[in-house]
Image (cartoon, rainbow, N blue to C red; front, top):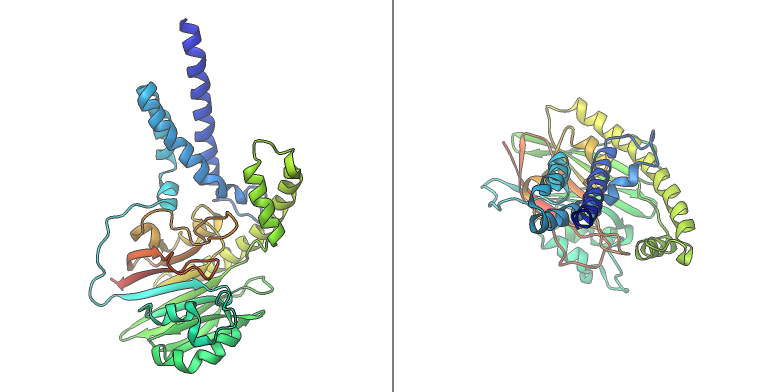
Length: 357
């Protein structure tokens, strides 16, 4: 009888150990440059799966064998920084007087406007009523920006926009934009622009990032959902073949994004004495090389002041926080949030208040 009780216990311990090891691997492979280790870079996408499984084991062992709870707790402790980055919990606090609001939003060409004029577009109206002091946009449809510019300038008199293929990457500001430069890196259609913004006696560098996406087609996104659905039966619906094709594409674009992140990190290293906010669509989760690299110099505003997973991409079963606001250590962030009330884009906007120390 004792043996019969011991064998299931050993099996569950082994399963929990595998979960812990998987969680650690996902967390720390994100430190590896994807251009050198392309087929490890996307492991970070699986981190929440292992994290949730490990938390379930905590409650399981509390019920059946409380002493073994040390195993999943040790895993969470080893991955504490990644757990906090992915799912932060913070006590809300009101932004102090003198704070400004930053908003970043990939507007997906201003959504499906269905032939609406610019002054009826839900996303544009949302932006104008957001109360943000500085707005960074990615994938802003050229025709809408051009037609709305005179009216938008009443709210945001200072602006810069640059074409990325058919759409603008743009910044709209209530404060003067003194200069604009670009961080050079390899890309056919992605950019990082640096806006030097004058705020009274202070100067703020705002980096608007739109890094390399995975460029998945609608069919490939459907394949992703199919793989997740049939993960226990890969022979169904050619899941194994689809998996190989997807992983090759993920690895290729992770490598490009890794080089882009290194270029931005080099800029940050040279400007550590400046007031910096880096925001935008990084196309990378909090458990990724891009996030790890940039947070060597900057703090994640959402990790410091947000709550929950903060999912910002919202289509095709790919629910991740890939839009970010990062701030230099001499800037305090308040009330970071992902606003799910506006659904016309495949991204939700992310915003926070910031105050220079």
